[in-house]
Amino acid sequence: MAHQISVFAENKPGRIEKITRLLTEEKINIRAITISSANGFGVIKILPDQPKKGYDILRSNSIPTYLQEVIAVIIPDIPGGLHQISFVLNKYNLNIEDAYGFVVESGKKAVLILQVENQPQAQEILENNGFQLLSDEEIYRF
Amino acid sequence: MIWNKAIEVMAREDLIKLQENKLQKTLMRCQNTPYYRNIFKNNHIDPCSIRTVENVKHIPPTTKEDLRKGFPLGFLATSRDEVVRIHSSSGTTGTPTVIYHSSKDIDTWSDLVARSLYMTGVRNGDVFQNMMSYGLFTGGLGMHYGAERIGSMVIPIGAGNTKRQIWFLRHFRSTVLHIIPSYALLLSTLIKADGLDPRKNLNIHIILLGAEPHSEETRRRVQDSFSAQAYNSYGLSEMNGPGVAFECIHQNGMHLWEDAYLMEIVKPDTLEPCKPGELGELLLTTLEREATPLLRYRTKDLTYIMEDPCPCGRTHQRIARIQGRTDDMFIFRGVNIFPIQIEKVLMNVSEVGSNYRIILDRDDFKDTLRIEVEIIPELFFGDLLRLERFQERLRGELRSEILVTPEVVFVEPGRLPATEGKAVRVIDQRKL
Image (tube, rainbow over all chains, first blue to last red; front, top):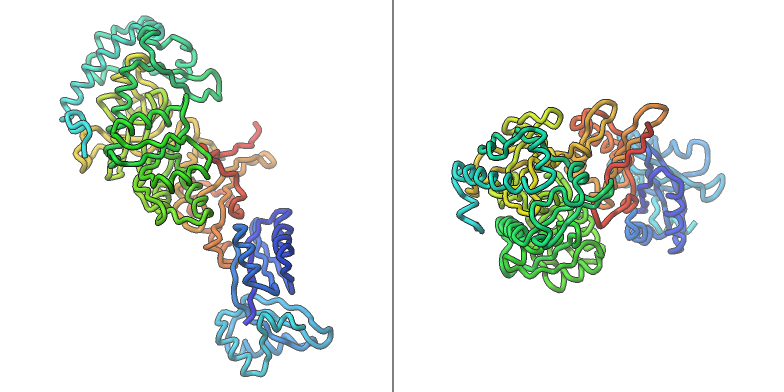
């Protein structure tokens, strides 16, 4: 299992600067980041190399932060790569709540991060269908 | 459990007789003051003719402005030599209002405070950490004298300096706190940040909340965060200070000491008397004070009388917790709103912190109402949708309380200004 940290931030200048500064000071590397915003605030999702440490440092600065498990799965970086995953999940009627990805080897390999409603079941289905899931350490091996 | 049995459980008809007796004496004292001599003369009032408590309504009420205009000696009823102390309001809006106290006045006041504290369970042997400022403000010294009279060990630490407060809490195992409610909530957070659990590692049993109107929800938060009983109190410097009205252990309204104060609840615009249970402005007449007697003083505080008898057996009538002040109300798009209504809603939801701000602004000639609340880190689950739903829920709950829909803004904890004194909650940036 891989981990992501989700961070609450006001939709104001300087908030991302503060979060990334705190992570930089602790030499935490960020593999991927997404930001979604709503009415005056946003949630920043970060995939760091040391999730627990990142979580602790942000929380000790009283920034609302949540550490959670996500599915990190390798997909081919080709047309239809993502569809292979969504096809399988759809077959089992599993809803994707959030997803983002990054390329690790252009034209060959990408990593897809998934938040699915029934995470353990989704994980099992993906593994049974031959997909390679990654742990925190494995994400960083690329 | 009763400090002064003869007075506190006196039959109502005897209590009213006692009031009428004391009212006569007060009116005689008022004749010694330039201000009231003029009032009686200009309104053709013979103070001897006012023999019943109902008849005080013939006397025009006294306002804070009158007190200011009477500075320095317009309200002094004794000789200067009999005055042993003065107290004064902050005077941020002009000349401060000054109240003179004779030696007997201090004695009466101390006894009223002792009576109030005893009612909540404060005893000889308690360690009383008094976190209100000492000096011209009445909260510090007023409670100090009452607590000493009971025989508690008083720590006269005063307001602010949280690190030192915590040091005393730990090393003297303080059992009773006298504190401003907004500071109580801040203090519990800072104690936790110091690595202590205010519920387990300290020895606090009783928290006396004063100097700031607050909601029932805030009281519950204070109780929960310290695992102690918190009691509401009422007082104002013009009526000595603390010890005018206080909650008993039933925590259901504050017994107003009617042997020392004559109360009326009136409609703020017409000054007509309100029915029992009807919300109005509290008017108070001093019945004991020698040096500065005041008649029908307009407190600007809104409350109502709770008529049903209290299970504690005290016969002095209770007033409800202050529902607002005639001068802290703001008008937003034609609707009258009291900040305490907003506080009530916010303190009832566990997902938000104890600090909040109400910001009124004007945008293209349209008024805006923005409420900033802090998100509690423990209750953040990384979910945008959940926060949006929560924001929507808060807007709905606020709308049903204040009848208009405010903008609700979530901020990170610690981003709103925190204060060790009275909190500034409302910021009105509307320019007329």
